[in-house]
Structures are given as C-alpha cells and as structure tokens.
Image 1 (tube, rainbow, N blue to C red):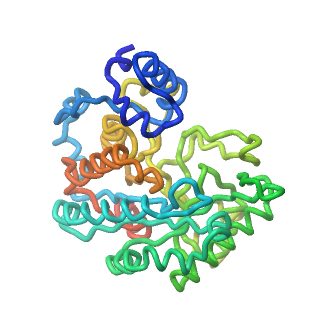
Image 2 (tube, one colour; image 1 turned 60 degrees about the horizontal axis):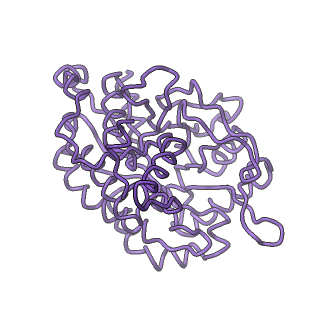
Image 3 (cartoon, one colour; image 1 turned 90 degrees about the vertical axis):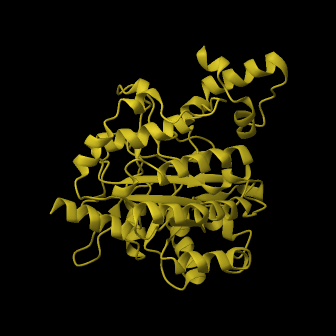
Length: 373
C-alpha cells in the first residue's frame, strides 16, 4: 500500500477526470482506479520531487556503459503523433502546438550536448476520421503552417499517422475497424493522399495507431512509397477485438527490438525499396524485470522513474537504438505537460548524451549498419 501514501492525486485525476476525488473516500476511489487501470499505463506520479538519482540508477556503472559504446553513437528517435485535441469530432491542435514549442525549446540543449544536429520525427494524423471533419491541407496549413515550414527547414522527419475509424450507421459515432481489409486499405490510401497534398510528396515514414498493423497493411504502405514503419512495440499487450475495435490485433511478443525487414516474399518486392520496421523501445519496471511483469513503451508521458528505468536498462543491455513516442493530445493537461518536459530534459542531459544522436529513421539505420559492419 506504499503507493497509497505516495501518490500525486492532482496529476492522476487530471488524466482521469471521470474519477471523483473529494476527501479520503474520493482518494481511495482514485487509488483503486489506478490499481485496476492506471498502473498498467505507467501512471505512478509520486508527488515528491524526483531525486538526482534513484537507487537503481546509483547501481549503474556509467563509465562501463560509456566504455562499452566506444566510439559508437546511439540513434535516438523522438516520435510525436500529431493528433487533434479530444474530442476528435471538434478538432483543435493546441496539444500539437504545445508539443512543437516544447521540442523546439529542448532542441538547443540536444545540439549542445550531442555536438551535432538534432532532428525530431513528426507523424501527422490524416486518416478519414480527421479529413471528414476538416480539410487537412487548409486547416493544418492555416493553423500550423509556419511551424511545419520551420520543422521541415531544420531537417525533421515528416511522417503520417493513421487510425482506421469508420463512421457508424446513422452517423452516431466512430468505430475502429481493422477487420475490413478494404476499409483499411482505403484509410491508408486516403491518408497518404492527404499527406501528399499537404507536403507535396509522399511520406517516407508511417505509424499506425492503436498498436495495430498486419502484413497486408504494411504491403500497402510499402506500395505507396514509405520506407519506414514505426508501429511495432515488442512484447506490449495489444487490445483485443471488441464492439469498439473490430479486427485481429497483432501478437507482438518476441518481436525484435532492433530494426528489421519483413520477409521479402510477403512485402518487399524484388528490385523495390525495402520497408523497414523500427520498433518503439519497450521495457519493464526495475522491480518486475521477470517475464511476468507488464511491459511499457518508451513514452515521455510515463512516470519519470519508469521512463528513466527503461532508457537506462536499454543502455545496459546494449540497445542499438532508442525510439520513444508521444501522442500530442495529452499535452492539453498542464500537469501531464510538466511530466513530459521533465522526461525529455532528462534525455537531453543524460550521462550518455554525448554518445547519442537525435535523428531520423534513414540516418538511424545507416548508423546501425555502420556499427554492424
């Protein structure tokens, strides 16, 4: 019950406003909500200021990790899913704008500490649910046009982010539908067409939402010109098919943690550019490192101690790459935004930051190939 007495109620309830929490009874209700739901998303949030180093961090031999890296540098991919604020039926982009502002404030620190250019990866939500309510080339260009131009000028990656929502009969809502292969293909083609209209070229990088993908969808992505997919999250539990989300969700247990190519006979045609899958970095809390513990994706919205554990554990285990992902729609919450900033600044000032490079998928694969050769 130690979490019960060491818990940031304000932050937790800002994330789950449907949980009433007034007085002791309300706090208990929020705690049991966390026990049954929030803890599986990495929502811990102790209220006290994090120490300079947690106990498990003091046990890390930093010099040994630096020596192990030798002259090699680790690519770091900062991926941002650029989504409208909730609810998506009334799209606004305040969270996306806040994410851009935060990333731009951290970029100089990354440049200084890595002694090289720092790039981010922006995945713009352009599937039919979004485009049915707004014209992407008009609305986004009007709201975020100057920011987009600035990000492209710095050499950042501009990718596409897709969910496969379809309108329910009668127009009463939206349902995730991954069971209808034709609808999935239509969503992908529509998203890529909207991207090309917005940026004047097809995207080279793609990220599906909902921790979903399959070989047929990846084949469409490859056919439309993308070379990198950043959807896979090794060993993370995916949601089952339900009335809200139709279709089979992938079993990601045992997926490689380093970039990999799908079998040539399934996706990569002879003579064509291969489609690379670059997995999101995942890990378990330090205290539950057994195979039975929950697995979390490296997400700057995680409680800081857990976020730091995943990064440091990956370095100890000799990871080839660090890939993190954040959805921008959570950035409307000031308390959550503070957590994200704390975690991103931790990366920018990490003890091994001199051996890291904030880069794009193409450069990341080149760096890994150089190491292997």
